[in-house]
Image (tube, rainbow over all chains, first blue to last red; front, top):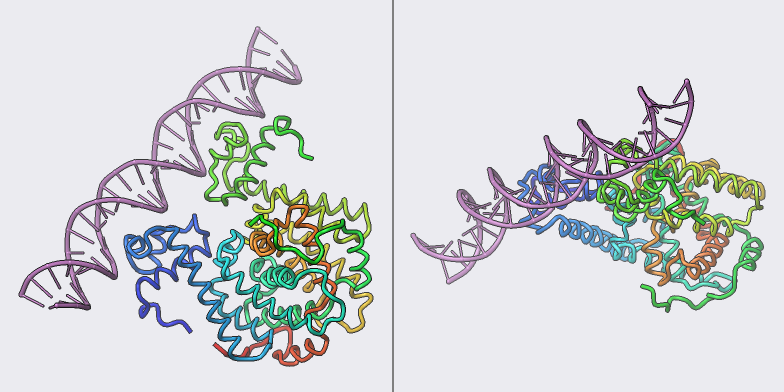
Length: 217
Length: 217
DNA sequence: AGGTATACTACACATGCGTGTAGTAGCCGA
DNA sequence: TCGGCTACTACACGCATGTGTAGTATACCT
């Protein structure tokens, strides 16, 4: 899977160590000295290569974004829309960085990574819209965004989900269970059309189908 | 909604300040002195009331859990299953603590709070199961857990969702849009029964323990 | 060979932190 | 009136951290 750590450049080993310690301990609690130790270098070399602790984190963010983009191209080129396969592959690739990724996402960082996922989600939604009877009230991108967020929920809330399921959802065993849960959830609506219509009717007026031109960015 | 800060006891003001600063800056970056300043007290008083920084965080966690339990009882006693109302109420109550809550959840803390949400989700799933044709392959609690995680996705990934929607999802405007998105997502499955069956067929055997995922890597 | 840039180490410095200690003001029961 | 308890402040300690500086070795280019 990964090349032997000894074979990586010092710069790469530092980045990997940072990814791990930032994830395990959080950005503030992780120390440059700890990262240097884990990478087998001196603390000064960290500064030499990355300049500052924050710049090191930026590089970690960018690395993950590149990794997802690579995976994305790979999937797009390679296989069809076997979604659960995609899930399995994505999970196994990002498992080592799960903790880092969760913290980064919650803090609003790694926006390009989230955008890549949202775009992927949008493609899925586009397929759905083709064979859909009723016209969606809300633009595709909006639904795709929330859909992407929901898809990330299990990763971000990994600890709670694993605790309640009684299985590590990233283990092979847990992935089997998770896949079955997701298949069930994704194939069964939580609201009937009637219930949805009733609830929608009770919503205050305004902000219908056209949205997304407001200025607060 | 909140009583005037001057009316609160110093202990409560410290807790509120901690909730805010822990949320805004994270546990490590927030300082006891900063919390004390925001609460208008000396830093020694924080220690006097809570003993240590970690104990202060524990109290914050417990406070949020109590707040949700209170809301839960309130909803259960009061109104029927008007889910979107519940969403609005929950959002407006937890909006000030959104950031704190997200960080806490990602780190696996506030387990009682997550459990409360998961239990609520389980009740919803139970209702669904009653009018369901096909028997679910996977236990109710498991689906409810992932459902709860997904329901939290927008809160936890608030920054990314708001950024892509172009609206603060916690503003009144954003809540309207979000409600419409959720109604659409919850009332339209992302997989048809046939697709789900096809994908399920490709899953390795058994939900209890198994292996081989394909190795496209 | 020579010279320069790059990879890397060792070490010192200032700072801000959580925590500990000592002390003061005010309430309350006997 | 007193004793003691609680709420609260001021201040000092020790320490770990990010960063800065100086120095060494190795590789590359001409």
